Image (cartoon, rainbow, N blue to C red; front, side, top):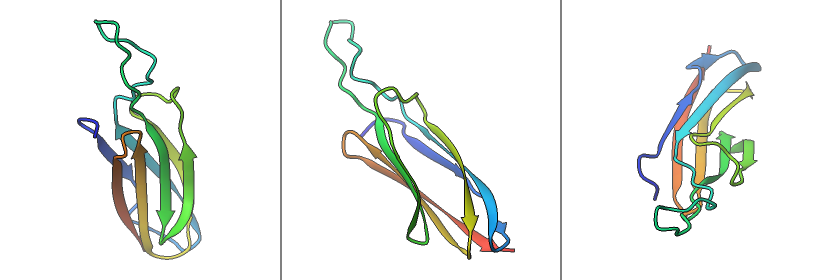
Length: 109
């Protein structure tokens, strides 16, 4: 597991039925590409967040595959339509097998 990994998510607390909302996510992660070398000339092992998903009440909203060129602390912003009150589940998958999750609920206004 990478050190100091912290997911952050911003979702409105409520929305009208059928309203499009803006969802913002950021995860603190160093994102090592596997192409750099340390001071001794040894290759630093690849360690990146390789996939990000967002589900709403069990239905997939976003599914992103990432490669070595992804930046440190990947940020995603996207729109989602809110058909009902429910829960967003955000999941980040690390090369080392670690999985980082966060959830946010949204009510109908």
